[in-house]
Amino acid sequence: MVRTPPPDGRDLTATRDDRLDVPELPTLDPGITLLDTEKRATGPLQALVLDHLLLAGGDALWVDSHGHAQSGLLARLAPCRRVLDRVHVARGFTPTQHATLVERLPDRVAPETSLVVLPAMDGQYRGDELPTEDARELFLRSLATVARVARERDLPVLVTRHRDDGFAAPLSSAADATLACERTEFGPRFRSDEFETLVYPGGPDGTAQTTLAYWTRILRARNPLHGATAETDAKRRGPTASAADAGGR
Image 1 (cartoon, helix red, strand yellow):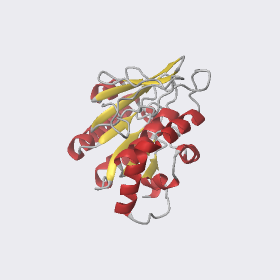
Image 2 (cartoon, one colour; image 1 turned 180 degrees about the vertical axis):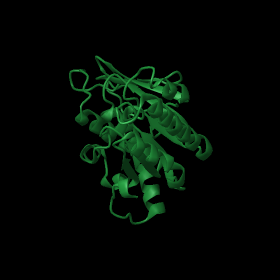
Image 3 (cartoon, rainbow, N blue to C red; image 1 turned 120 degrees about the horizontal axis):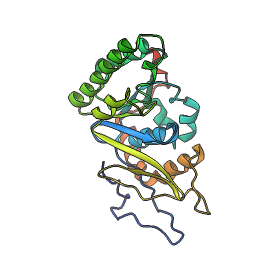
Image 4 (tube, rainbow, N blue to C red; image 1 turned 90 degrees about the vertical axis):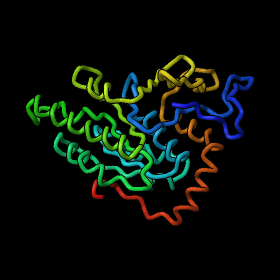
């Protein structure tokens, strides 16, 4: 993880009312990054995905579980609609469906793929559809595939856990980096062993806001960083086809 610089190369500093000119979000490096949050990670997860695409360009392959890829929320968060065409979602509702989608990932990665996303990666393997040992074996096989994709394709892979316990321990062990999103009295803060953001206040009174509106405001405030990348990427890609759910792709 590296600190994201402001557009003119200055160090980020607070203004007189303690607000940041450009709020910080961590960049996603090649390898598996585990996003660790206190509660359901939909807001910070979607913000990190959209921010990565707006900065790095390319497309995201998203293998969804437990309803994290909510198209309505993504549409409300996205600073521009065009970026939504680059988020390709496939949904698995059972352990075998999820494992099949993960197994297909190596074939679905294309030159324009810049990110792979697997929220609640352990979630579908915890139910009673399969015996516990069979489900664990399937989960480990899926995790090995994801690790191979990250390693062989040199891609960032963003994952979250459904639950932090012994079953999910292999996911923590496989992660190249763990990124914690912590709530503070002044707003959310991202922290890892090598990175810590400055806190971007949630409202005029400095109180924390972790709502969708908060993350929407964060992404819009980072528009100076996104602008140059979006313009370059648009010229490279040309006209974009209409968005499609990748469940059938």
